[in-house]
Length: 369
Image (cartoon, rainbow, N blue to C red; front, side, top):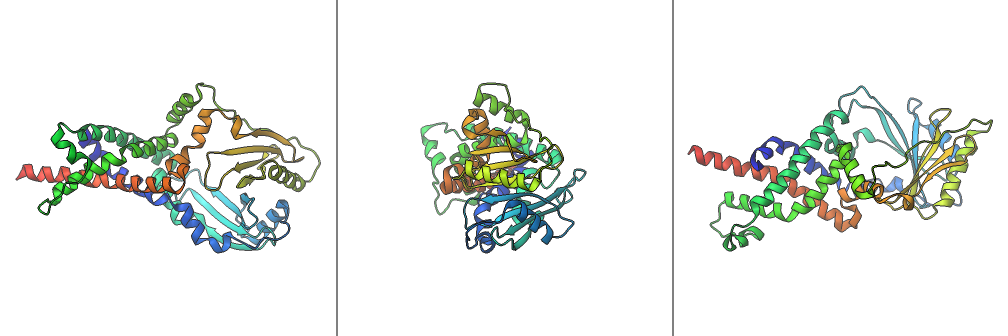
């Protein structure tokens, strides 16, 4: 089982593990590469979001319509506007995006600092290769998902194969006992077994958290186990009621209320209403680089009245578990040490199909001889 499952899924596992390894520190690298436009000299007061939105829209290509904006409580950080439009009829990643731009703006002056084409960003391409092999999600993600399930079965069967049969073989399972005469085949075999054992538990956690995104039924199982109920969270959307009032005032009111309500949070993602009955949606990220603590607010697009709030402390454990899934998946839940562990675990996972193939290929050649 270990052999044939490995041969059938090895290439997919290699791609997913390697891209996951690369993506772990994507945020740190992006922040470093974009530092000059990410940080600004703070001034007394930022321009109201309604005017800043209008100003930014007027300065960019008229074919791009702004979709949402990331706003930060840190006065030294620029605000990032995003213009995104997808293509639902596409089959690949590059066909699925008409445009995806990030616009770094100085919130005190309205100056556009830089515009990036996120569609061609290196880490976005790596993420989508990891997510769905650069295919449309409904096509690529099941392939990644089922390959991940196979990988979990391989980790379990590999641990069974690793288990020492007697005391004499126990030493060979925990550390390298190489001599000058040790051949590369033995070294490859030990590398596959010993490193596979040490990262096995971490690899299973990374794999299971990946399955939460790949399959709704697996996410439902995690939620039910964590919450102890089959009743799903309330994700219902409020509705705006039309009144003859400027929408710009409502947008400014919504952000002002959010900042006062969550003054210690890292930042907010504000998405304006898309039609006449839609609401202003604001997602609050509590900590920089972490997503397990978040809140959401819904405001009337005409009056700026708060219609609905979902606070982290009011969520059940199942929902909190799902919210923490990304942070656990990349190791961020434990800070930089956790990311380092996730990085090396993913890197070793990428080598397992290669070393496993070499073991099989070497034995096959030996039998032929």
